[in-house]
Amino acid sequence: MSRGALSAIELTRLRGNTRAGGTDWVIEEWPIAFEYNGVAHAVMLATPTDLSDFALGFSLGEGIVEQPGEMDILAVREQSQGWVVEIALDDARFDMLQSRRRSLLGTSGCGLCGTESLASALRPAPTVPMTQSVTPGAIAAACAALGNLQPMNLRSGGVHAAAWVSPSGLLVREDVGRHNALDKLIGARARAPLQPGFLLLSSRASYELVHKAAMAGIEILVAISAPTALAIRFAESTGITLIAFARGEQMNVYANAGRVVCRS
Image (cartoon, rainbow, N blue to C red):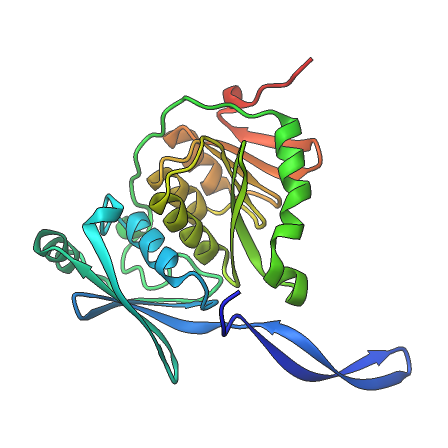
């Protein structure tokens, strides 16, 4: 866990009619600025961990690059008011970015803040292939394992996680924002291609999360909480299997159920 993820905060605990002082660990939330070729593009409020993964996942999800090799992380600089991630793009990619540049201030709970029009809010994404399957038992096992693989959440609570679940185990990224956690995971997954598997989210399944999954070519998305109607429609159109309310072996499949194999 890198420096800056958690802070020890003094508090007053109330237990019935008694009160006592104490200390609690609280998750951090800081502005993280992404600069491409020296030009500020986006500022996200996020937990300052795995920032290189965050920058890569964000860049892939936004279509700024299509492959990890099309960008370089030059530096991650801590400043008094937050962090700056300096990113280098080649001229062609940078020209494309400038032609569609939008100023983006994203809160930890927002995946589309700063979008300037309806057309740019609902962006197209590729259709994913149909190559993988999953069993309810595998989903239940992953849900049971996830909690103990969230060190920041175990200490502070209120931290989202995104996990890539494969036969080799769970790769987990955490953040105060669910969109940020998924960007970090997509970046980590792109750096070191992993075994086939599925995406597990500790949050609800919103449109933006399904869109990020589609951009990353992820076939199966499992959320512990509820989906939105727009997320379901988008999953249907892009071929993603969308599973939500995953609690043990009880879950709902909202789109493309053919990948879910029930063992008799």
